[in-house]
Length: 155
Image (cartoon, rainbow, N blue to C red; front, side, top):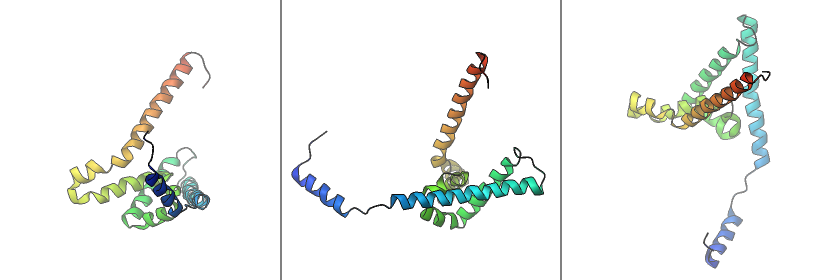
Protein backbone atom coordinates (compact mmCIF):
# COMPACT_ATOMS: atom_id res chain seq x y z
CA UNK A 1 0.00 0.00 0.00
CA UNK A 2 1.39 3.37 -1.00
CA UNK A 3 1.98 6.06 1.56
CA UNK A 4 -0.18 9.15 1.12
CA UNK A 5 1.38 12.49 0.42
CA UNK A 6 0.71 15.38 2.81
CA UNK A 7 -1.67 16.87 0.24
CA UNK A 8 -3.62 13.63 0.06
CA UNK A 9 -3.77 13.40 3.85
CA UNK A 10 -5.01 17.00 4.03
CA UNK A 11 -7.65 16.25 1.42
CA UNK A 12 -8.78 13.14 3.33
CA UNK A 13 -9.15 15.18 6.54
CA UNK A 14 -11.14 17.88 4.73
CA UNK A 15 -13.36 15.32 3.02
CA UNK A 16 -14.03 13.52 6.32
CA UNK A 17 -14.86 16.84 8.01
CA UNK A 18 -17.47 17.69 5.35
CA UNK A 19 -18.89 14.18 5.02
CA UNK A 20 -22.57 13.94 5.84
CA UNK A 21 -23.10 11.94 9.01
CA UNK A 22 -25.53 9.08 8.51
CA UNK A 23 -28.21 8.58 11.15
CA UNK A 24 -27.46 4.88 11.58
CA UNK A 25 -29.63 4.28 14.64
CA UNK A 26 -32.57 6.14 13.11
CA UNK A 27 -32.19 4.17 9.85
CA UNK A 28 -32.07 0.88 11.75
CA UNK A 29 -35.23 1.76 13.67
CA UNK A 30 -37.07 2.72 10.47
CA UNK A 31 -35.93 -0.48 8.74
CA UNK A 32 -36.99 -2.56 11.73
CA UNK A 33 -40.48 -1.11 11.91
CA UNK A 34 -41.18 -1.04 8.17
CA UNK A 35 -39.80 -4.56 7.62
CA UNK A 36 -41.70 -5.74 10.67
CA UNK A 37 -44.87 -4.13 9.35
CA UNK A 38 -44.49 -5.97 6.05
CA UNK A 39 -44.07 -9.22 7.97
CA UNK A 40 -47.06 -8.36 10.15
CA UNK A 41 -49.18 -7.82 7.02
CA UNK A 42 -47.98 -11.20 5.80
CA UNK A 43 -49.02 -12.78 9.09
CA UNK A 44 -52.50 -11.23 8.80
CA UNK A 45 -52.74 -12.53 5.24
CA UNK A 46 -51.77 -16.01 6.42
CA UNK A 47 -54.43 -15.93 9.13
CA UNK A 48 -56.93 -14.68 6.54
CA UNK A 49 -56.18 -17.63 4.28
CA UNK A 50 -56.53 -19.96 7.25
CA UNK A 51 -59.82 -18.43 8.44
CA UNK A 52 -61.62 -17.65 5.15
CA UNK A 53 -60.24 -20.33 2.83
CA UNK A 54 -59.76 -23.23 5.24
CA UNK A 55 -55.99 -23.59 4.78
CA UNK A 56 -53.95 -25.08 7.58
CA UNK A 57 -50.92 -23.30 9.01
CA UNK A 58 -48.38 -24.95 6.74
CA UNK A 59 -50.38 -24.68 3.51
CA UNK A 60 -51.37 -21.03 4.04
CA UNK A 61 -47.76 -19.93 3.60
CA UNK A 62 -47.69 -20.42 -0.17
CA UNK A 63 -50.64 -18.17 -1.08
CA UNK A 64 -49.43 -15.65 1.50
CA UNK A 65 -46.03 -15.36 -0.15
CA UNK A 66 -47.64 -15.24 -3.60
CA UNK A 67 -49.96 -12.43 -2.47
CA UNK A 68 -47.07 -10.43 -1.01
CA UNK A 69 -45.10 -10.85 -4.25
CA UNK A 70 -48.04 -9.76 -6.41
CA UNK A 71 -48.75 -6.71 -4.23
CA UNK A 72 -45.06 -5.70 -4.15
CA UNK A 73 -44.81 -6.07 -7.92
CA UNK A 74 -47.91 -3.95 -8.46
CA UNK A 75 -46.67 -1.29 -6.03
CA UNK A 76 -43.29 -1.29 -7.81
CA UNK A 77 -44.99 -0.82 -11.17
CA UNK A 78 -46.99 2.10 -9.77
CA UNK A 79 -43.87 3.66 -8.24
CA UNK A 80 -45.17 3.42 -4.68
CA UNK A 81 -42.81 0.73 -3.37
CA UNK A 82 -39.74 2.79 -4.26
CA UNK A 83 -40.94 5.67 -2.08
CA UNK A 84 -41.28 3.32 0.87
CA UNK A 85 -37.85 1.86 0.10
CA UNK A 86 -36.32 5.35 0.13
CA UNK A 87 -37.77 5.89 3.58
CA UNK A 88 -37.15 2.46 5.10
CA UNK A 89 -33.98 1.28 3.37
CA UNK A 90 -33.23 -2.35 4.23
CA UNK A 91 -36.62 -2.74 5.87
CA UNK A 92 -38.18 -3.17 2.44
CA UNK A 93 -35.30 -5.17 0.98
CA UNK A 94 -35.18 -8.04 3.44
CA UNK A 95 -38.70 -9.57 3.20
CA UNK A 96 -39.79 -11.44 0.05
CA UNK A 97 -41.30 -8.17 -1.17
CA UNK A 98 -37.79 -6.78 -1.66
CA UNK A 99 -36.96 -9.68 -3.95
CA UNK A 100 -40.14 -9.05 -5.96
CA UNK A 101 -39.25 -5.36 -6.13
CA UNK A 102 -35.76 -6.05 -7.46
CA UNK A 103 -37.07 -8.34 -10.21
CA UNK A 104 -39.91 -6.00 -11.20
CA UNK A 105 -37.68 -2.91 -11.18
CA UNK A 106 -35.17 -4.55 -13.51
CA UNK A 107 -37.96 -5.71 -15.81
CA UNK A 108 -39.45 -2.21 -15.95
CA UNK A 109 -36.05 -0.62 -16.53
CA UNK A 110 -35.21 -2.85 -19.51
CA UNK A 111 -38.64 -3.18 -21.15
CA UNK A 112 -37.67 -0.84 -24.01
CA UNK A 113 -35.09 -3.40 -25.17
CA UNK A 114 -37.81 -5.97 -25.87
CA UNK A 115 -39.41 -8.73 -23.89
CA UNK A 116 -36.84 -11.46 -24.53
CA UNK A 117 -33.49 -9.64 -24.48
CA UNK A 118 -34.61 -6.71 -22.35
CA UNK A 119 -37.02 -7.99 -19.75
CA UNK A 120 -36.11 -11.69 -19.83
CA UNK A 121 -32.38 -11.13 -20.06
CA UNK A 122 -32.06 -8.47 -17.41
CA UNK A 123 -34.72 -8.97 -14.77
CA UNK A 124 -32.72 -11.57 -12.87
CA UNK A 125 -29.36 -9.77 -12.96
CA UNK A 126 -29.78 -8.32 -9.49
CA UNK A 127 -31.89 -11.15 -8.13
CA UNK A 128 -29.82 -13.88 -9.78
CA UNK A 129 -27.19 -13.88 -7.07
CA UNK A 130 -29.91 -14.37 -4.46
CA UNK A 131 -31.34 -17.30 -6.41
CA UNK A 132 -27.91 -18.89 -6.89
CA UNK A 133 -26.93 -18.44 -3.24
CA UNK A 134 -30.27 -19.78 -2.02
CA UNK A 135 -30.10 -22.81 -4.30
CA UNK A 136 -26.50 -23.57 -3.37
CA UNK A 137 -27.20 -23.15 0.35
CA UNK A 138 -30.21 -25.46 0.13
CA UNK A 139 -28.06 -28.08 -1.63
CA UNK A 140 -25.32 -27.87 1.00
CA UNK A 141 -27.79 -28.11 3.90
CA UNK A 142 -29.61 -31.05 2.25
CA UNK A 143 -26.28 -32.79 1.64
CA UNK A 144 -25.18 -32.31 5.26
CA UNK A 145 -28.56 -33.50 6.53
CA UNK A 146 -28.46 -36.57 4.29
CA UNK A 147 -25.03 -37.51 5.56
CA UNK A 148 -26.12 -36.89 9.15
CA UNK A 149 -29.23 -39.05 8.74
CA UNK A 150 -27.24 -41.81 7.00
CA UNK A 151 -24.78 -42.02 9.89
CA UNK A 152 -27.59 -42.48 12.38
CA UNK A 153 -28.20 -38.91 13.55
CA UNK A 154 -31.64 -37.76 14.60
CA UNK A 155 -33.41 -35.30 12.33
